Length: 217
Image (cartoon, rainbow, N blue to C red; front, top):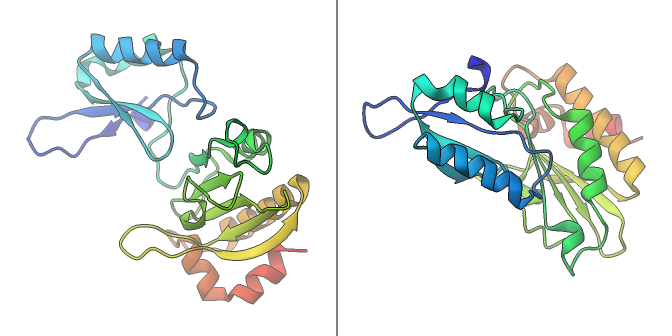
């Protein structure tokens, strides 16, 4: 249980905690939202919408955490930063700008990579068009659909105080090719990067050309 409880950093000395239900996709039924909201209200919690497309229950007291977990009847997001839990998707099939129905590849990537332990915190963003409304270019891994309906992959993006767009490592891909390159690249990064070395720093250390040569076959 302790692996799923995040201690909040607050402006007071009161200890408060966060639990985050692991929803299978960013498209959530009204019943699920109501269920989470009612439990949060019952225990004096506050709902927070995160950039990871998760709904967290924050401001919780320690003595009610186990009871909340039981009542939610949902898997919880683990708190470890080295576990890959941040995989986001744009509006996808529900958007008129979409060039490809990316919900399918999103679900495949969640099934294949979710909770994989990596050297450092890693985020994946998937966008159905080049507008990239979920900022896929500044994710560690970006999967974007071009005007022709083909995928291209960016890697090494970062946000924060020194934002950078990721390097484009491959383009003109179908769904299966995209997944294969991602599997190769993530495995290569996991096996060869230093502890706490971000993907961008790993690529810069070994050289972009070398990274592409290894991961794009």
